[in-house]
Image 1: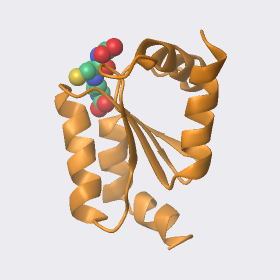
Image 2: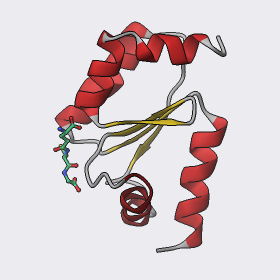
Image 3: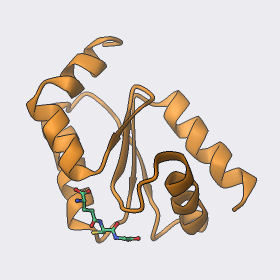
Image 4: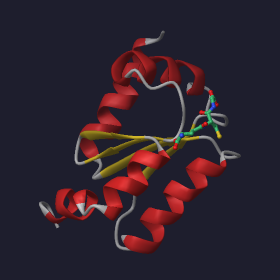
Length: 105
Ligand SMILES: N[C@@H](CCC(=O)N[C@@H](CS)C(=O)NCC(=O)O)C(=O)O
């Protein structure tokens, strides 16, 4: 795995309120992106489409090492690992996303 994939992931998490590691064709990723667009329209999530960018495979490998999660979407909010789409939808339903994001709003 390249060092740049690790650096890219860590910078994305550190520098963005929401970082979404996605694949452009993935229906679960689409649901996650739609959730943020509809419920937090003022936010600009940093989105990486791993099937499109050249570092995609290396990023996915680093995310597996870091989060033990093999699938996309892989979502971070305020530097906290939320998980996949199911976890993200649940975190919205129980108010966790709103609470995390309100901290710096
Ligand atoms: N239950 C997971 C399902 C995620 C999932 O199955 N994602 C597929 C893409 S649609 C995946 O990551 N497949 C493996 C891969 O693309 O490497 C969630 O809610 O995020």
